[in-house]
Image (cartoon, rainbow, N blue to C red; front, side):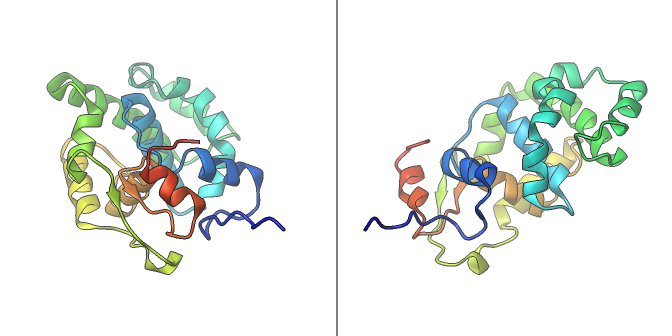
Length: 195
């Protein structure tokens, strides 16, 4: 009899959630645009379940031009009003406006430093932190690194980047490996196997 695949406790059984966990969550990401997408989606999640955002991700990608910061930075008030009528995304004015604000902040940061990825990864010393959690209850909601990242992003004009959002972002983008130790992805992600 084959042994069941063990996953992190938060995954559930929905195929969308399983696929996200098995191929994307916790995999180190170094592309500026993909990091921007994750940051925006983690901010959109505030007060909601991750599954809600994950199920709307395709609509977010369409509504926000594939998360191209140069395009989003040009969105004006009329486009925000249009997005507020889009049932495919979370229709929260502050979250929508923060996406535009964050795109502009990202472009300024890139002009100054060259790389959004380099800026973000320096909070973990440039390489993933590997934790060894045995239960979901052990995972922190925030860490000193996520607090430092939050402060730095806020100082640069980003919004919806509190320490809890930043830690969720760090988990999603592989800055920390928070797969539980008995999850089949724990060792795969640690060895660079992406899916």
